[in-house]
Length: 422
Image 1 (cartoon, rainbow, N blue to C red):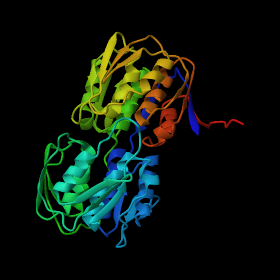
Image 2: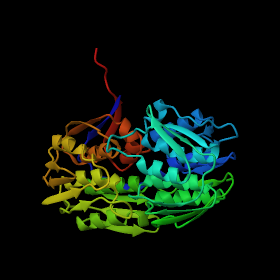
Image 3: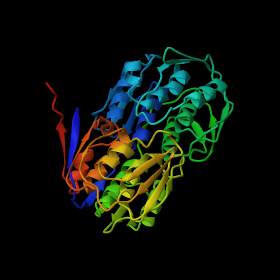
Image 4: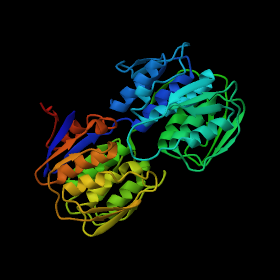
């Protein structure tokens, strides 16, 4: 296993580019199997989750060219399998997103229960409920979801919670169902809009993506297309916090400004200057942040995927902050690791109290999950001394060339293999 070694204290300065959105790329890769034609995806991030999704598709009989000059080339072809392996799907929760398109394309899908970061129970009942309303017969047994449908038929589906994954699965399945589907209380994330734009390019008829009500008029077949994936708002937010926590001057090129309004608002509330540029965002920081309260909510609320990074920043704030997690019930695992670095973070249910300290100190810590791992890197950048971060495979799942981007801004960070005992 590899680890990061961070020598803290360097002020980050300069410009850094944002890659394609992880949470969009994975879903568009899955959507490509709705057609027999070739699809080309551009601005795909080179991250572990993308490589895993490519393996999932290849196991289904899809050809995936990750290194084509034009982008990622996906050739589903006519011979598509309907069963995914547990070994692959258990590595990443987003793998369940092949359920909807497989069912729509083949009338059958047998997908292993999803894995990934251990940050919540991740119930799949909304996926199942919605697909059953579309006419699927579903059984869940022996760790697999087995769905069958001779014909999917449009209907009205009201989600109890605006689940991103359920919205995406149902959006893809309904795209090839007979008649009209109305999806109420749908997720509104920018990645949903990107998926709908991609599907519409393929010939789908979708209206209302980005709102709580989406209308899908089913079509008989979809065709191949080219599409450029939107910039990753979570990576952009992480890099802005990196500038803030090191009291730096960082320009995040291609940061999706409209997708980061609440993150920017909180950074400004902390006392940082955030400038909107024609091609991104610039953060200027010279002082400790002021304490603020943060509560995560589904989009357009504050993103849960930036919560851990902001918690690391609040460890150095003047005063006491309260962070409330309303999306995932187990997303405070990084708290103990931040405390090892001298933070004062106390967890009470789905609230965290962060009492700001003047300084953090380097320590040996472990990345508990993807965003928590990124938060520990940020804490290490600001800490006195050396921080060693183990289990960085979590970070590699969602950040492309993370240490190289930070190095380009002046960070002292290296990736090294861990020594084996014995």
